[in-house]
Image: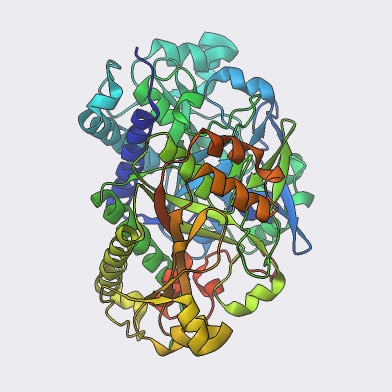
Length: 292
Length: 292
């Protein structure tokens, strides 16, 4: 394929953002402004191999504040305060180990379309996300034909296949994600991964893009029973470092489900870019220097 | 007035974001994703009294990275790369001195609608922003009537009056902004403030909201002559700390004009909130503790 120009990347990104804003509003969501600094943030305690080196923190006003790794805990707080359907174009900072450069899909700063639905089940999320992906791919293909060039984007067709991770591991081994992503020409759901303390282990999901582009969404029904939350936090060794969340959990968590869709990963898939660096106007890639 | 509920604040904020996205796209802009960490950021070298205590920084991959104080330098880089009209819903972090709590309109984390136009003059920005404010206030009044309650929002009428700051200072003294904001019932432009190195001192502008709500936008035509940029940076003592920008400036800056509109400040005005803290779902106010 011809080399991707920045303006083409920007046009496809703009279309994805525009479509997301319209689609989620059309589905009854309201847009919440992102939060970048918090007393708590997603501990990423379920990330296999602890690929995040450290949480970025700053000191201000006598407090240590964490750079947002994801807004999951803040989304849960809003849901508990009575919000019903929310989405956020949420910049996240995850200071990953430098070897993650090689995956082609990890950036240490990225934006996700982060959403949460009160009292929802995983099936509600499947339907919402499948509708989004089918419609955004159509919008990109129609409105960004010139920017896509010779990409030859395949039409995304809902519903997507669903697999249990334990079945995929049994068949393909630990590299199931890479193998399955390369073999498929449609996105598929991978269910039941071992994950962060807040995700119900029986009802969580990843969405994997086809053609080798890999994971684009993680999410789940959230653990809402206070006792179970505290037990899991203790087992993961993160009880002491998340006191504000513990206090919140003791006051009662409202059940919800949600997830986050990586904008750059989606744009990489749409444009057929080699590396996620090629779709960031200011690349923020583990193991590479920041230039500006 | 009755106490503002979080859901009402969120609905008005959602309407402002929705309207901004549609309005700027309708005017030929494309939306760029925010950048949160940079080798350079807005030095805020023109802020009177140096109200920002320090730039937030983190160390990662052997580099010091600054938390984004505004994307002005990154906007200029994109304009130089050929982008024509861009906007960003840009979270900014400015670690202000605690006494800024008292102004009622300073948060140490906020989102601005940040925009830039290649080869534009200040009059282009006036027309664009006046059109935005007139239409967004109408949209909020029409679609968020229930959330506004008894606010009694005045209809915003373009064009806005324009004043030179030196005339305002001569008439009202150093508190001209407060006095003029309280006395007026329409927004007005204040021209020719002493400002950051990148703003042409003869062609910059602030937009001041009426009814005492104060400044909601800062912007200007940008200094684009390399020699002048370097002289101003040297005079402000920021040449050594912004080497990447100096290198960029030496390669040639493309003239542009732009600005940033504070979302929370606009929502505060629309809702009639006492303090900007009352319109942030997670308040981030200098001098106050972060709770979550």
